[in-house]
Image (cartoon, rainbow, N blue to C red; front, side, top):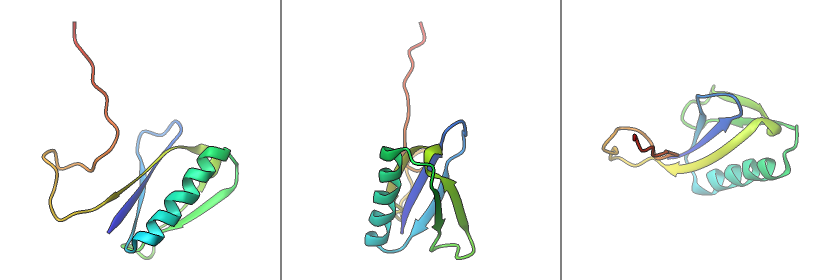
Length: 91
């Protein structure tokens, strides 16, 4: 199972959908990154394979970041999916 996660501008919580086939996940990831590159205001509709009734509609111009990762049977040490992080030094 592949998860495609969207981060929207001015929204702290990401949106995510799951795809079973790698080709479908890569195609969706490609279309989302293309929308991100072009900064177009077209409406993008996304469906989820894991939850068939889950549908997401997003304006392409509101996408800030997209990531794709494969959901494996083992959890990470923190129990969270891979993603973006930052390090800060306290002085």
